[in-house]
Image (cartoon, rainbow, N blue to C red; front, side):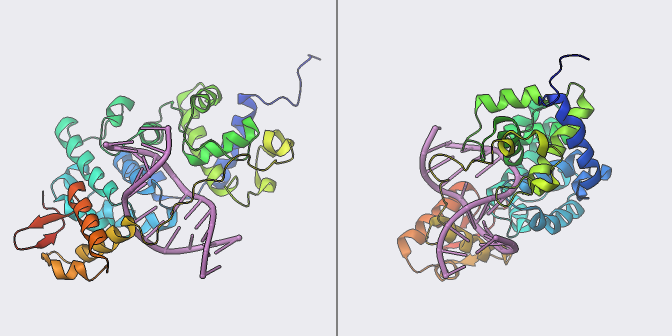
Amino acid sequence: MTATTATQTTPASLHTPVIGWFDQHARDLPWRRPEAGAWGVMVSEFMLQQTPVNRVLPVYEQWLARWPRPADLAADPPGEAVRSWGRLGYPRRALRLHGAAQAITERHGGDVPSEHAQLLALPGIGEYTAAAVASFAYRQRHAVLDTNVRRVFARAATGIQYPPNATTAAERKLARALLPDESEQAAQWAAATMELGALVCTAKNEDCTRCPIATQCAWRLAGKPAHQGPPRRGQTYAGTDRQVRGRLLAVLRETVTPVPQSALDAVWEEPVQRARALDGLVADGLVEPLAGGQYRLPLT
DNA sequence: CAAGCGTGGGG
DNA sequence: TCCCCAAGCTT
């Protein structure tokens, strides 16, 4: 026999069980079907930035039915993207997705680019989304570090309950070290680790009995020590500008005809904050001011 | 780099 | 009820 330590965790010892688990338990999500294409993957990634899967599903279906290609979206006003975004939250994402569709139409012949650098240059696409589209849609080899993967790696490899607030160089290095060499297997690994974090290795109430790598998990082996350090910053919402913006935009989504100032004034009592919120929406390009104190979603 | 940016479901 | 959280990006 060799002197191999049977219990040591190696990258390869994680790949087979995690990918095997994914084969058995992956959810059948529409953007994972072959017919979704790169555009479907990209749309889903925008919508899933900070919004849960179950709320994205219906909006995704409507969106792809209405705008099956980037050029279809680019041909409509940005305000229509904002309206169709509905109540997914963070409506600037809708504007950025529209802008990305325009850039794809103008610069890439209407096809979602496959190169990471070109994806990264599109509005609304950062490090994570560029890697996700390149990996999921084009089966390339990229470290895909979202909140789920970061939590899985923090626990399984680093032995801590939660990753740092912001992605660190150490996390990127670890993710690259764990990535399978072959690109198709790397793409499966990316999707599988993400799904594991979403379904089993969740932020709260993780279920280690269903985890395919529980026997190798550093955090579990250490007795699942509680998170050290300051509590995660809780985002207050009630009474903030964000809440006011949400109410204002909800009014404007209701109608294609311009809305008078009085209709907007009705959503919030305090005039200073109300005006600040509306100014912010205009500055962001989410609202278009018209002559005579009227407002609408942007046509350009 | 910390702050700002929506919304709704579940414990 | 309140608090936490959900496939981040931009400035």
